[in-house]
Each structure stands twice: as structure tokens, then as C-alpha cells.
Length: 149
Image 1: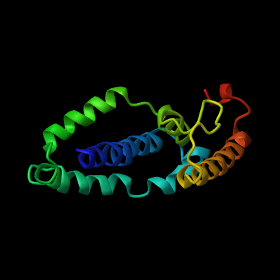
Image 2: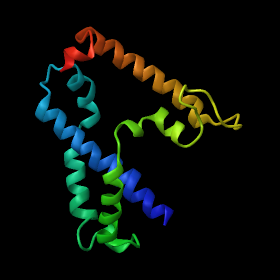
Image 3: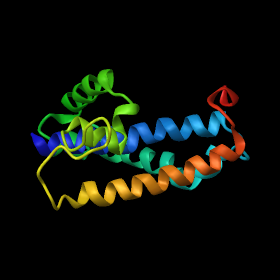
Image 4: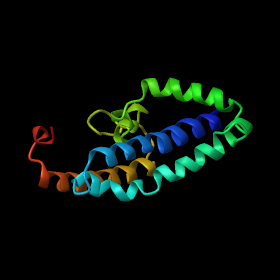
């Protein structure tokens, strides 16, 4: 069951379906000169096309979801629907994930006794680098949150 969950929720829902929602939203609402569009466009390259192939091949009646995953496409859709009802963009951030799983407290301090947890150590370093980079770019365009609205 864990393998089915991994394929259906973190992979299909969070990597493919939500990425497609964000991709389509970006292209529909942000002009090509918008700073977020410039930052995100390469990350969304071919997202819709790849998902289209996957939906036709994997989610069809005879596709892998129906034939390989025990829950099948109907059970998979139900599981994804349940998760989606409670899904939160805010809670998917790397730091929030570590907090939710008990590896950090709300202030970002370690709460566990695992000394060599490389996912946390290197992940936090990358998170901070990316966050600083994006913030510096957006700060050039927007002085405050009110400027965005």
C-alpha cells in the first residue's frame, strides 16, 4: 500500500497534477516579462505535454494505474480526491515538511537526535539559497506585499 500511495500522491498528484495547475496558471496570468514567469518558465517546460502522454498511457482503462496498482484508477482517483481536499500549498514547503514530521520546531531548530540526516542538512542549505535568490529578484520588482496586489 505504501508504494501505491507514493505513486499516486507524492508522484502523480504533487509532481504532475499540481505542477500542471501551477504551469497553466502561470501561462494564463503572468506575462512573459513578469519576474515569476521568468523564474518559473524553464521549470514548466513540457509539463503539459508530458502529463498529456502520461494521462493517455497510464490513466487509461488499460493503463498502468488500472493494471499494476492494486487500488486501480478508480481507487487511485478516490485517494487523490481525499488528499486534495486537505492539501495545502503552504504545508508542502521543505521546512514545513520537516516541522510536520518532527525534525524541526517552528523556529527552525532541530528537534530530533539524528545527527547525520543529510536530507535535512543539505535540503535546508539549498532551501535557503533558493529562497534568498528568489527573494532578491522579487524585491527588485516589489517593495512590499501590497505592491503585488
